[in-house]
Every structure is written in structure tokens, then in C-alpha cells.
Length: 157
Image (cartoon, rainbow, N blue to C red):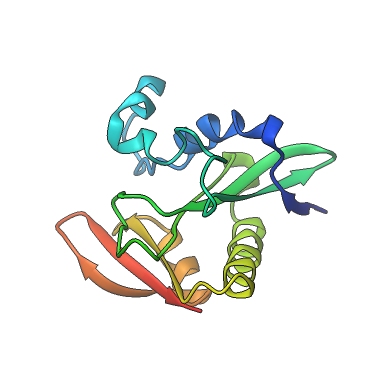
């Protein structure tokens, strides 16, 4: 399947709400949470006012001119926060487009952009049982901390 990766446009920032919901890892056999979960302050930091800070960068993956995935970074006090110079990642794809290499391509492109812009590292938080942990390691992230449920991962650029 052919896909294209491009910068997110200002008119598409509202899509990040859907992609934030899709980013919530739901283990097999567990019912997904209600959509209203993304209204919680600890999740709103990922999208509230996106595009208003110099460190807000987003990419869209599209197939046939339709968005199917997104990756975005910003410096924020989120689950994966390292310091005020390290952008934190958020990434998701609609379920039917997962496992096709699109997420890996989105991650690699965002890491390239961050390196080109002079960032030294990027971080993310991921649940330990999330299959995406393997992909994050494959693109260069390393586990630097953990709690009962999550890994904090860092990629040096």
C-alpha cells in the first residue's frame, strides 16, 4: 500500500484529537475507554494549543489523500518528560493501517527533522505491554526509566 508522509497543516490540528484517542493502548480483551478520556488534563497536554509553540511539529501519513496516521512532538510535561529541551513524541495510526511500516516511517522522518533542527534527543512513554516498544527500539529509542506500567524511552539524535 502506497502512503505519503507530509507536514501537518494548521487546518488539520483538530485531527490530533482523534489520533490522540487512537494512541491509547488497549490490551487485547480489554474494552477501549470512552472518547471523553482525552479531555483529562494529563492527555490534553499533547494537543491543547498545538501549533502555538516553536517546538510543536507534526506529520501526517496519508493514503489516497486521506490521513491514516500522525506523529507529533512538543516540549511538554507529559508521561515521557525528560527536560525542557527534549521534545516528547505522540504517534498513532488508525487500526486498519497498523503493522504496515507506516508508523516506523513516521518515526524515522520525525527523528530526522528533529536532528536537522538541532535537537539532541527525543523521548516518549509507552506501556510495557504495547507491541510498539519493539518498533521504538528499532528506530533508536532506549529505555532510560520505568515504573510499574510504562517505560520512559529516549532517542539520542
